[in-house]
Length: 214
Image (cartoon, rainbow, N blue to C red; front, side):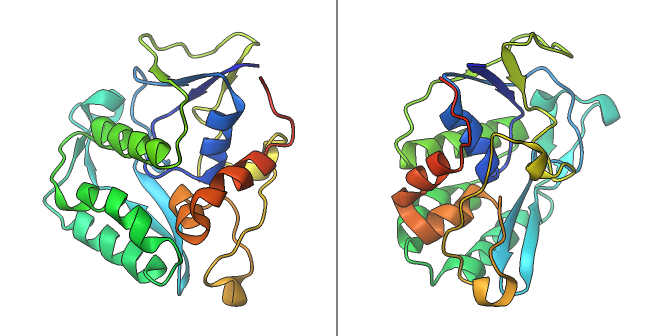
């Protein structure tokens, strides 16, 4: 399968980037309804107290059936300040903190109102940082199912789904700051890998692909 469909995601896990690396045609779903408790507004990092979920507060402008493009960010809370504080606390001593911090910090100091736009801009900045030249397309119509030649990951890459179900993704261990306390914690947000390994992350993601697809 050379085509993959992904949901938009906030600082998504390594598995998400493995799919981008693995497929020549990458599409982001733009026409679905928002689903709560997913990576659309949540990421997981590793701090001194273990895995930590960072969640962007949202406003569903049309209730439980709000299209993903119409989901607003609830800026009545200090979520940007709190998220950046957590990221700094977890990674400020990491080898590549200063390099990646310059890329990420604007997304925690400038105000954004739309979740889809925010996630998209942040994803593109990370892809540019690691020099990934894949064109990321966007769907124009919602389809509940796709043909056999399309890998539908919209709901497969989720905190609710065990990543080990994905037989094409086998996480490769890399250095983590708190591994002495927790061992290796796989499939965290891409920033965990980037802060700890820098651009070597590219080789680590490649190595995690069990059956590469052209």
